[in-house]
Every structure is written in structure tokens, then in C-alpha cells.
Image 1: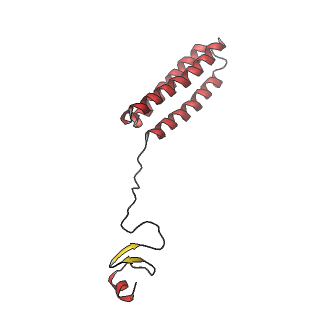
Image 2: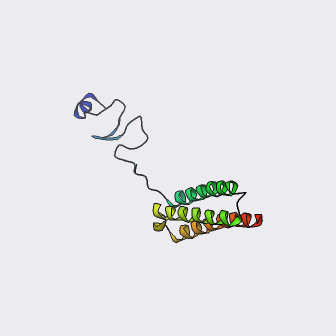
Length: 125
């Protein structure tokens, strides 16, 4: 880059990689100058699935331990309500627009974890 080119471009920096009068890249970045990365957050179904899985695991474990001294039906009802609320929240976050496979996997995962808690509570009597 010569002095005449630098005078033409106000934002020119020594070391710019030029192709004729067009800057290809700056030395401090690996991206071409014209490439503008998409910085918008676009959530994907695996994020909703994982969030639902982890939150349900924590919620149901907490409820199960907290309600050890209570009758089994109390644990089962509260765990079912918590799972229903979590499922509705997950669908509202965007799972309703996800692929059918993700929807089925999420529903099965929620039901399976709830089933384990219900079996454990029922064994308590």
C-alpha cells in the first residue's frame, strides 16, 4: 500500500491487504473486509432440549428429596405439574417451531424423567 492509496482511504492502515483499490483484509483479522458475520442469536432445538433436560433434572431431584416424608401421591402430583409447566415453557420458547423429531425427543425425555420420579415415589408407598 503506497502513500497515494493511503490518502484515498481514510480508514486505511499500514499492512492492509489490498487487491487493486479494494481492501481484502486487515492484518489484525482473519476475516475478509466485506464479510460481516451474523451476530444475531438464533436458538436451535438442541438448546431448548438441553435446557429442559437440565432444568427438569434439577427440579425433580429437588422435589423428590424435599417431599421424602410426604405421601407418594404428593410427589407425583407436584412433579407432574412441574414437568407440565416446564414443557409448556419449552414449547413457548420455540420448540413448537422445531422439527418433529426434536418435539418427539423432548416429550419423550420429559415423560421418561417424570416416570423415573413417579416410580421412585410409588416405591416409597
